[in-house]
Image 1 (tube, rainbow, N blue to C red):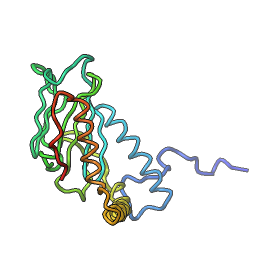
Image 2 (image 1 turned 60 degrees about the vertical axis):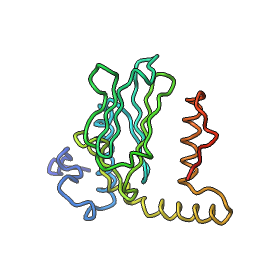
Image 3 (image 1 turned 180 degrees about the vertical axis):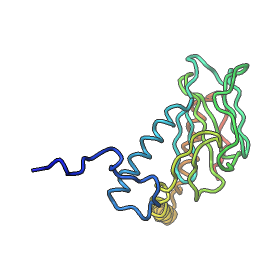
Length: 198
């Protein structure tokens, strides 16, 4: 039976994970820290005018545009270090310095269902996770990605080696083929008979 002298739990006595290094936390503290970080990131990312996801070698950005929008209505500029996407004559939906450099020649954009712009960016350094798409937007905690990196790299290398032994395309070649198929479907008026994927 509790007495009046027993300490009363208060919010302040809950796990305080804000001042500790992740490595120094107990498993309970890490779980709480991860939960709070996820919540914070989800709230911040929900305020952005686009959605994005990434793999080790690429970043994909999806932007909603008014129904009926066509490619000629858009102002899209992709450089090695910057990205700008918007409707012509209006404020850009996204514009700024990219988190890291990209391979411009392997990066593309398309419009889907005349209502969404899909931007595919190939990272120059495919061994790093991006904290954000453009530098002035909220950052993600990339430590959680780094914990998965080694396993993902090993799996990719094993798959690519197996594909090469069978004379089949590697994961990178399969991605390029898929991107070309999407582009062909959106541009049936173009002749792709002489296109080679290297």
